[in-house]
Image (cartoon, rainbow, N blue to C red; front, side, top):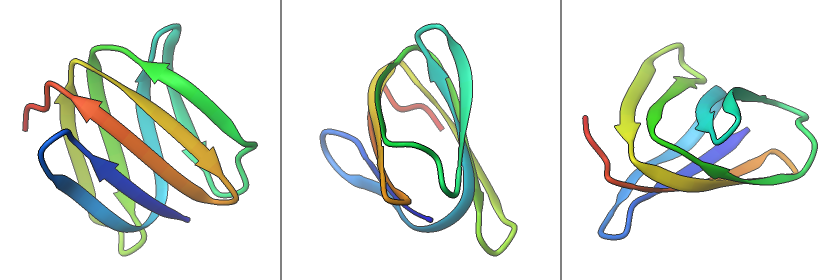
Amino acid sequence: MNIAVLSPDKEIFNGEITSVKVPGLGGQFEILKGHAAIVSSLGEGTVRILKKDGDKMSFTIEKGFIEVLNNEVSLLVQGLQD
């Protein structure tokens, strides 16, 4: 599964992942390979990415959106804090 993580001013990460956990408005949820198509608003919280090579990446956001379609994940975030 591929992900593109973008903020208003730069691309944060683009590559293959195993999973991503995001802070949805109703609580945290995880996207895995084969996930149904979805578009969702995100709230304040931590985004956790497990890369295909096993490395982990995490950062805090204030808000954003996630779109999943055919194992392609687009994550648009604002208020990024490492």
